[in-house]
Length: 165
Ligand code: S3P
Image (cartoon, rainbow, N blue to C red):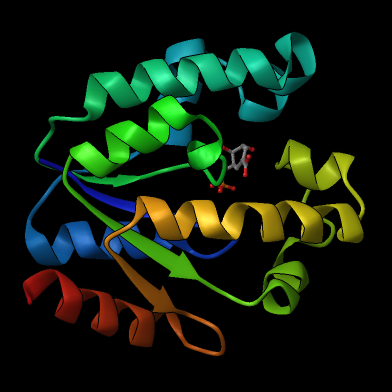
């Protein structure tokens, strides 16, 4: 069963996931990257050409495909949008929520040109999205790490402790 990392955009799921894979000797699958390979185009192009709904459908298909893998799976920030996905997460493996304050995330996200939802939304709209999603991440996960003000290394150590416990 996989180890899933979930959390809002910019929290460091992909970066931390790679390190966890190395430490645990497990393959790492980044869902956004997997989707880009499958579709042969970037996430922002999928959103632009076919819309968010289309992206969400592929995201669910990919989650179904990967849910039994022995791997670290880093998810896109919107994985908890669909109930179907939340159910798969709660039934399949360990789910860790990487939390960070919105202020710190916004500093990292502002000006991002690869993430369609950052392009499309004002900081207030993103804050609303963040607030709406927070309980969904919390419900879908078994444990949470507060990464606010922490280095990647500190987050990694904390996460490894949780995984090993
Ligand atoms: C999204 C997050 C992105 C990517 C897509 C949608 C979201 O992943 O899946 O742009 O809805 O929060 P990251 O969390 O890796 O940025």
